[in-house]
Length: 161
Image (cartoon, rainbow, N blue to C red; front, side, top):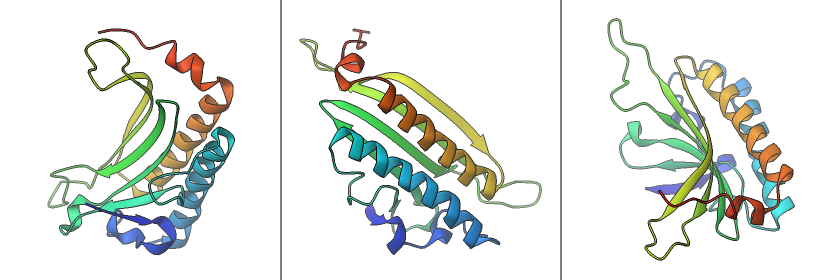
């Protein structure tokens, strides 16, 4: 998988039938700005490229997704929008997008199991503008959650499964 900043990518990687790329880019820009604000508030770099929202894509068109994160002191605020696997449209089959936004913490138990999801929002969409709007709203939720509590308070909510 490759990572490309939103501004350097092609919205059609995730929305191949984009009829309103301008509207999509405006919504994606809102999501990116919110991730950047969260990262700034936490004093960290936004995303993997430092640009907020970014594309994760492979050589196969169907592998493209949008991703944004801000991570500090073993606390991760992450949002991702994926084209649903096997969702290539056909007769009677609509294209789908899957949204996942999480606040998670790195496990600090004796047997490190990876991460614990503390809060999560998920959604499924069958229209590109709804998916982009959902991504912008999820990024707003992450910004709100990241501002509402200090990173240490999230760490304190980690529980052993």
